[in-house]
Image 1 (cartoon, one colour):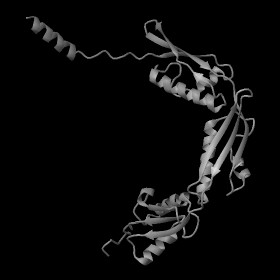
Image 2 (tube, rainbow, N blue to C red):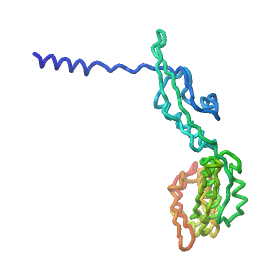
Image 3 (cartoon, rainbow, N blue to C red):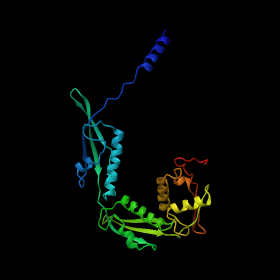
Image 4 (cartoon, rainbow, N blue to C red):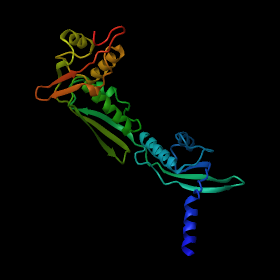
Length: 276
């Protein structure tokens, strides 16, 4: 008898649906400890959370990380956003609402003291420095300088320096709250296009294909020109769609050359077939 009751209880427990969590509205979002950046600006950074929205703790954590990144981009290198405290308040006849308090430690604001380059020979150092989004005295941002470094690398690749290596060194002066940066470069040799092979086409069709791409033999190899060539070919709709994965790229470090092998598949033109 007892076993039957236990069995019936288990069946009832398993068949009864679990109560669904009730949506809780966000009543307020308050920042504490911020002095340099006002609360209105911080609230404007929140994409998904605003007063009246459904309170979601996991979304709140993502939003707070974006606020921390904002502080770092504005030169507050030591800024941290603490663990928020959430208070659930009773609403007359409407359940509960969430009031969120977010502690912020801003710390000092760091500026760029100087930006220099080292071992740059392919172009004048001034050319690369003019590309920098930061000048001396600007709030220091690692993200912006990282994006600048990527652009410098793109410039080197366009010149054929496929093995160029860039290192951004920073020295932080805690007394002056300033950062000195040096972009050190190892350029490496210039790689040239050694061969352009076109497989699967006869000699005349292969010659016509080579004339349609933006790379020629014995010129500096520019990866961006390969990308643009594929885009141009695809827009012509003469061949089956091609991507970088469909091009075989062999780099000969000893000879300093790049061999490209294309395998285009012509598309049948209207009124014709591949068997004609």
